[in-house]
Length: 161
Ligand code: MG
Image 1 (tube, rainbow, N blue to C red):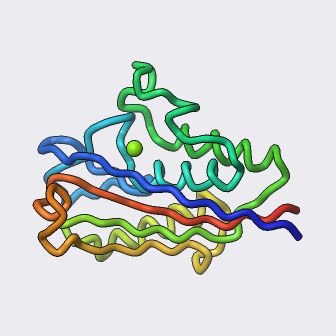
Image 2: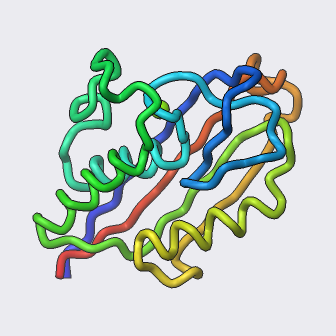
């Protein structure tokens, strides 16, 4: 059996009046949302980069340039779908994912399970193969600590069928 490991991270600024999307789930309790490429879902972006990384296929910006207006406000599931299709084409499948989100506020409590359930279904994985962790920046680390940015990283393991 052949294994591939991949890692991705993503960081976006947060601004008032935008929806906060995390792992395909709308965090309704957040007054702020992420600004940037597409809907700026840092979990899906980090996950997409991790899968592309495991496959040695560059990064999300290579496939979907942020300068291209067609990706403005796009649902980030488009990017994930691209990475999953490449993975399947190359004969790999996901074994597990491990994601950490850094967000000062709101507390993600109930959302961690919602994201886990959503991604387990989306990725056709058992729930114990989908780890969603959340931390704060303890009030430090500049914009992360002041609640003006959000960060996520993702690690994936692929196996060759
Ligand atoms: Mg991004």
